[in-house]
Length: 402
Image (cartoon, one colour):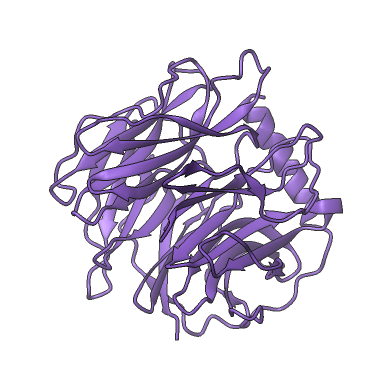
């Protein structure tokens, strides 16, 4: 299925779903403080990550020029972002409001970034591009395509994790089986070292949802990946796969929601790990009942508790989550309100109880098609999203989790 038609179907489906219920009131954002963003007018697709040293990195796409640019910034101790630094730039990139570039910091100080480039120019096919920096982002190496399939198909929705010293794990949706709109999207994984060596490619699942975000995290036992599955009957529930020293496990459903939808909702899950404490969040809408759920695990993702519904009644989804050492989790999602689309955050306790939802984006015209992201260092949480006012602009806020 071509990306444009999939996105259209998804937008219509989400619009209908989010009209089903009246929203519950959210708590006032008393503890939210906006940080002046280093991204200017025409910026979008922000992503956040916390490095091993606790520094928080913001990456985004700048489309104000004729060429798309991937940039990044680091949050300083004085709560200001460093000036934006260029990672890569190109004329024929695939810029999609739901398929985000990202950056990861490895324990040895190496930075790795990924983005998408059209293949060929003017088509709906695109490839993943990776680049490494060994000098804190001052210079970046030549881009690498991590997937072995180079055909004119879709390769994207990437998740990066630290896989070893100077090595990253790359999870992506691979369309190499799709020919002339016939075939299935697969979920693939490989490793890439900072000197460009690509490891063995593994296929985790041969039939997955075509354009929902993937997510992965590192546990004491290895890597855990979550994604939206796709059955022969078009059931698109969230699945989990784990990578240990024995290889990848057979995928299992995180929750049997039984959401049947004939078209990708463009609404992937999120997973986070803090030691053996794992937290996963996802959007689902069985029988047109839209909801955002969280599930917690205390054993590295081998088993999960029952889903905990966290939304306020009219969720759009587009989730992110941060697991805590305490077994709690902080979740963010997009919610429809009379004032417009909002990003809300909520603390989920290890016993399944919850704090009040807090509006993190008061006064912002949140872009409906965007995906907000969070990162945490110590007790400080940073959240980034695209403000959809004309022109688009990345905005960031911070708050502390007491």
